[in-house]
Image (cartoon, rainbow, N blue to C red; front, side, top):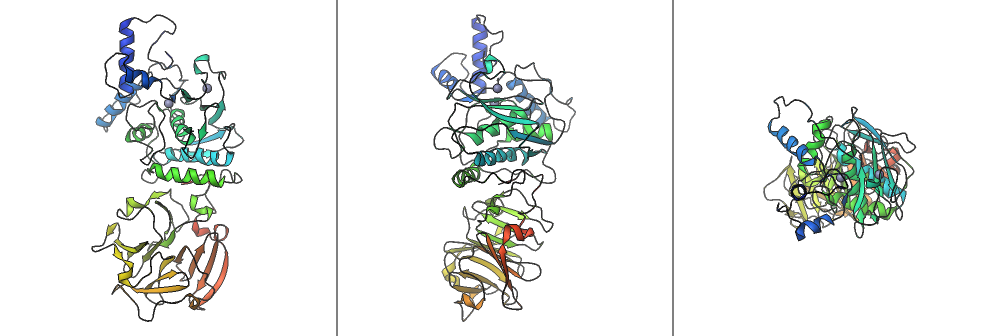
Amino acid sequence: EKYGYLHQDNHIHNQAEMQSAIREFQWLSRLPITGELDRATLRQMAEPRCGVSDEGSQQLWAQRVNAIFTAGRDHGGQPRRRKKRSASQGEKWYKRHLTYQIVNWPRHLSPGPVRLAVRAAFQLWSNVSGLVFQEAPEGPADIRLAFYEGDHNDGSSNAFDGPGGTLAHAFLPCRGEAHFDMAERWTLNGHKGHNLFMVTAHEIGHTLGLEHSPVRHALMSPYYRKLGRSLVLSWDDIIAVQQLYGKPLGGRPVRLPGQVFHAALQEWELADAPSGHQGTAQPLYCQGVFDAITMDQNETVLVFRGSVYWTVSAEGTVSAALPLRQRWPQLPLAIEAAAFSPLDSKWYFFKGKRMWRYTGSKLDPGFPRKSSDLGLPRHPDCAFYYAPLGHLVLFKGSRYFVLNLKTLRSEPYYPRRLSDWTGVPQGTNGVLTRPDGRLYLFRQHQFWRFDPVKVRVTREGTWVQELSWTGCSNTLLNNNIL
Ligand SMILES: [Zn+2]
Ligand SMILES: [Zn+2]
């Protein structure tokens, strides 16, 4: 009755009604369809889950799949829906830019990381649909997220039940409410308790008009799912949201693997990220740490961090975090140095004792190669193409190395001492050449600008604030933080 399998609450259901309800439940729960209350079915009924009713999910899923096969043909617009307990009037938003507000906060988690996790949960959906979200910390907002305990004035059947059982519920458009059980042990790092990011992402799906999915690994499955390594959104989630709101504006959908969110959530929780700059969320690398940076032939800056990278166009538009191995398939999970060489239009990547070379997204034959065979050090600090020499340069500690890209051999008389580069510090994590020929070196929050004509550092400062082409100073109307 609570989840919409048996209608007419509080009457005695006959055997036919019971069997049909159990069969429907088993179908949505991907259990063998026996119509019997067997052990597996009873166990599944005790699993922690979303409080939104499953009623009608089966028909909607069938219509969604049908629409895929009849795409291009006229199938009469939006499917008709059965009357739903949790539904208010209307089934989708008729605007693409939606605001949200976090009304109150869970216990035992600080507002800073919660705010970032919620923003990331919205980003998950904006990455694959035509929607844009923005936090409105003071309200009013289209979508409100709130934590409540027990009965909280939306009907006794919606009362929360303490730890486990129902974790949260939400309402279809345009009511714009998602409620979370305050009594749950909410977590961001995924060790104990229920992951707030995953549950928020699911409930946001309802506030956008999505209902429960029978697809295994779908985020819109009614049951709680841990944040794993695999993709957070399944094909069914993406089709469902795109059928309502279309594809992302000006770009292909971005799907991020769970491990990217996992790493970010852990980091935010540890750092207890400052909640100071609300509404102007910056990409994660703007916090000051990245693995490598380079610039391609279109003057697009690429910033690498862990298993993802960002692009900053010449006009200053920052992309969402993109999976590294989607573009360069054979790379390791993270890299230590990267350089695009305009000499041969190739990409060079370094990690540990190896070097990878790509033409576009294609790994060149014979690569990766051992750095030691090329006369290069292990674990370089950074790498860049240096036009005055016509070669690739690698910094490592107190020395630098020069690689001839035509012969793939180290130039004679190198390595030499880093002090040749007057003013350049040791241990930089990235370096690139700007279109004016000057070199920018990065170490955490600091940057150094090296002038090849004067052969010395001519400026230093804090890059997030001072270098707008890093994409960290203007990120309005954009909820991408990963
Ligand atoms: Zn749900
Ligand atoms: Zn509620």
